[in-house]
Amino acid sequence: MLDITQIGEAIRTWIESTTGLLCIYSDGMGARPKGPYLTLKIISADSLGEGESEATDLPDYTIDVEHSKIYEIQASINAFRGVPFQEISKLVDSLDHTLTDDHFTSAGLGIGKRSEARSINEVINKKWENRAQVDLFFHARSSSMENIEGIKQIEITNEINGSTAEITHPDIS
Image 1: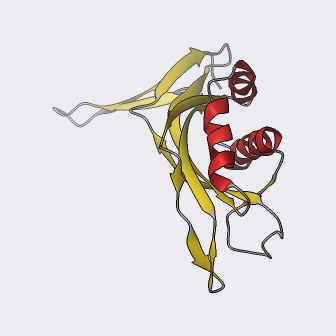
Image 2: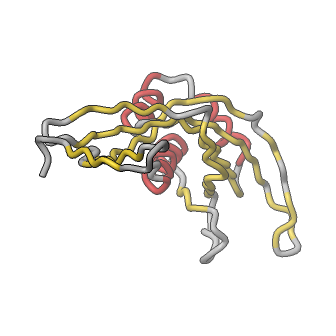
């Protein structure tokens, strides 16, 4: 299962270390910071194709099944006040740096595609405010494990005469 909180923290940490500015989650709650800042919102997490499952038979006649899937996570980053387009450009430029790649790899994320950096000034509280925005796409693998009990007993019905027989696995009680 994807841990969206952990993914968001990895992205937020990178934003703050790259720009030197505060990054908050864009949930619409709380007061806006006074100076320049950035916001982060995880927009979507979509699976890419079918997942994989690998089964392992265990000595106790159960089966461990590991399921894994690749997801594409879309993150929207907005910068406000100051020179927001410059801050967004710093982030986009750093995506090609080895340390950025190492940061995301250690968090289990791969850097995917990105939108263009956009200057989208807007009116907030009846005043124009500088704002810039970019969408980034990351890839992450999700895995989960389940244990399935083996078949202990089956019942077979003869469709010709209606008789039934039960077969029990000899090693399972």
